Image (cartoon, rainbow, N blue to C red; front, side, top):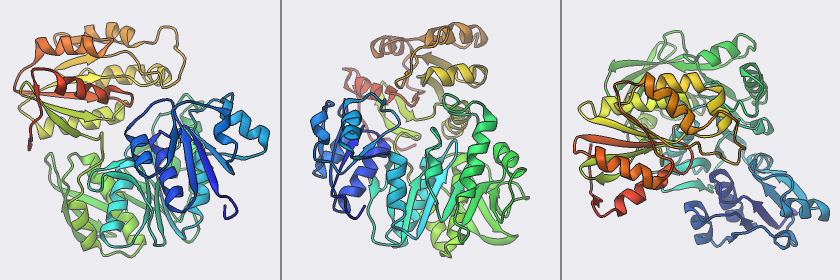
Length: 464
């Protein structure tokens, strides 16, 4: 790395790629990249002086020393092929992150099927507020800092690990956090056993001087712990864990007492809702114990954590209805978010606009989606966001709608293939005592702009 000067990113507009590109640029490398569309992430890159091309061309790699590509880039990409032909060092994003990680003696990597972006953001905010000057690479915009990457001058690096394609096995962290292990990314893994095996191999890559910190309440984690031993730190609500969160006030924003090996450490109440976020905070406390941070100071930071973009994010008011947006795209995540909505807004009717993500996920978890999406009072379904996947016969947003609408009777269920059709449906349903929640990992978040630009919409400051 010390002999390389120019780095080119293919698919630079992704959240993970753009964050890494910003870090390398801050480290002094000449960075460029390409993507097919403009986004808030490419805007951040261009503001940082990074050249972004909006088409693929072989000429973009001519003077590059390193070419980094995302998992979404096909092997027949012209820039990728040209780089290989020229003998340029071509590596996936995970390997480049591993190279950067090696610069820091205390790397902290957060993995898991759900909650890793929020947990990584919490950990980053703790280290920043406690003046540890960390380098940060997160898969979402940290609301308190309005960024997803930060170059620090300290010994700490905090990063989110992507298990979706097995690339997290490139890392050798000082500390590992595993939030949970679920049936996810079955487009890459053969089955749940393959997922568990990957996490076991990930655990083995942790530094012997560091620590693996796992959620002991999670079923998937429990199954993995039956196959591997080690001096792990387990956290959760169950008294069987080393680090225990005792719920002393069960509400939308639960009050939690924290105990480590039966010793009382303190109390916290987060500014983000849900028990799932309280579990994420316990993971951060576990890391903080290993780093010998002041737990009382850590708890103060956690209380003021304002969350991450697209995680239970307030977007505005439309015809008196509160607009929320959430990234949840797996049944486990959907269930957690719906639970939080009910507790934060118990007296309001929920209209859920759900955009399924990937044909393979819908096929693998069809029954689980049917079960969890029976809950909302009103459900509007869209077509599946493919994320570069090819369609699977019999698997579509409309076929799912046809299946679930009878299961939800008498609760209303609608299908809108386009944003315009969804808007027409909402016009007939709108009311002041409502929550309109958009949900999914695709482009459904863009729908709020349509609503708020609509002639009957208005953007207001709102406090729950």
